Image 1 (tube, rainbow, N blue to C red):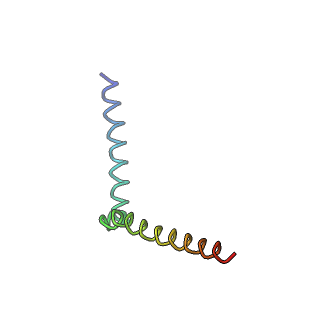
Image 2 (image 1 turned 90 degrees about the vertical axis):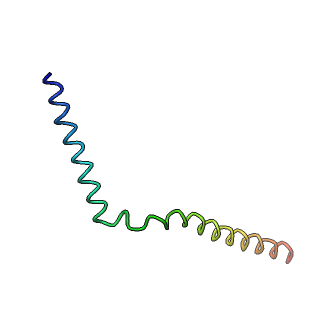
Image 3 (image 1 turned 30 degrees about the vertical axis):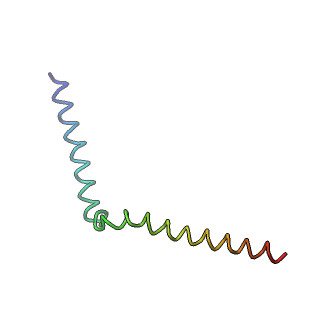
Length: 66
């Protein structure tokens, strides 16, 4: 029975630690913008595709110039 009391006390400390970490994250602004990260994936893909197209066109120009 004493093991159960120890486990309950330990679990309360762990839970309070997670609560403190969550409150700290909210106050530091970790959850301010929830929608932009999902769109950023799409924006990065378009930017990456433009870079790939530029590199391939530069490569074609160099190979045609030789």
